[in-house]
Amino acid sequence: MSEKVVLTADNSLMSDYRHNEFLGFGTCAPPNVIPDMVYRWLIFPPIKTRDGMPVAAPYGLRKVEAQLLNEGFNVSTVTPDHLAKHIRGAKALGIHVMDPFGLGPASSTLVAVFKKEPFLAQYFRALLSSQPVRKAKKHGMKIIVGGPGTWQFRYRPKFVKKYGIDCIIEGEGEKVVGKIFRAALNGENLPALYEVSASESPSLEEIPEIIGPSINGLVEIGRGCCRGCKFCSVTLRPLRWYPVERILREMSVNSQAGIGGVTLHAEDVMLYGSKDTSPNEEKLVNLHEKVIKKCEGITWSHCSVAAVASSPKLFSHLAEIITQKRPWWGAEIGLETGSAKLAEKIMPAKALPYKPQEWPDVIRTGMGLMHDNNLIPAGTLIVGVPEETEEDLIKTIELMDDLKNCRSLIVPLFFVPMGRLKDEDWFKDTGMTELHEELLIKCLQHDYRWIKSLIDASFAGNWREKVTGPFYKVFASIVEIRAKQQGIDINPQID
Image (cartoon, rainbow, N blue to C red):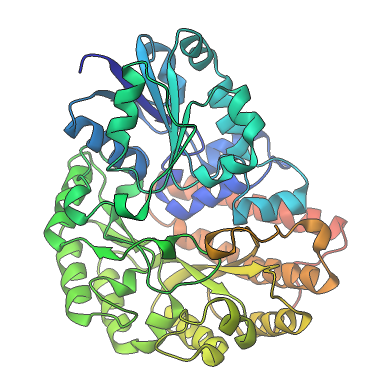
């Protein structure tokens, strides 16, 4: 096909976050005491480009790019700052979104605290408001949006109409993007919302391998989750694991572009190759032994405390493999609650192979193992689920006291209606009680206790990283000062 398709994402996503994937959470914050341009330079500097093409792009965007190229489309993936040059003559613009309106758990929590729109929402609106996009839209270009954040458009119908978004693809899109973009190029009417059905979920063989490099070497090792938590949409997707050879091929795409590290992505890396919630030792060890030989260092996107707690020897073995190249690694961890009763109500399988009644002890054991084996978790707590009681909050606050010596960052996330709870009410800051505020302060105190040592660990590499590290410590000190001005002591004396 000769007609051009352009793919992009807003500037909060087109960044390598200084080679630290978890620094990307900084885009969830609203503007603050640091000037906006300085904040962007610190947290999400622009990705390097060649003729407007990013040297690396979000992994999900690379998957769509690969699928369209495999189907014969003329595709260009470009950054927002270079759209003017590449969008001329394009009949379709595909936009990858993660949290376009700041309605995601992390963003909505920070918005409630700071009462301002987060950076990522501002940059998404700026992309659609940009002169190249508006001009191309007037000439008949179709705008098609996809990615993990598409659910948010259900709550912003006026925005969709105002900015002329023609089609929103919600779900795994490999089997449907071709026909949607083909219809756009042919001038056909597009569905305003295309919900990918379960029967359209791609098999492993139907998911293409990336052709262009991904940001921070992120490589998917599997899709889906078998935990079945009520508040999560990922559990609605079937569980699939990629063979090691395929993972290594995608890694080679990144390494050939000079990206030495790899981020192994799955909803629970510890369950790689398994059919249930029991880790598969043989496949996990084989994966890590082969990956470590082909990269400069490994980190994980996500893992579960239950899988870690149930397999201490296996986890320690994996840690030995990973720390051959780097002294520590990170992962996002869903702690969710310190209440066994609430765990039993909303996520009874989260603790497997343990009982949900044992969930708080599972957290303590798993977090202790992570601390001892140099995995630094970014832990999340879900706040405000419909079933939550004061007793549940008290248990979570008590859990925070027990975790004070575990090296980690822990963030409370306001409940967002997703998964099987998508029809429930949002948790808004107006519903915050004194116990919610106490939990927020506990998390701030915990994070501040560890933040400066984590900054040292994150920026202990080359000289450029050592230069930027002190700026983050200054930012942490500013946060402490601002908190004290509001009567909150986030740096108390902790035994």
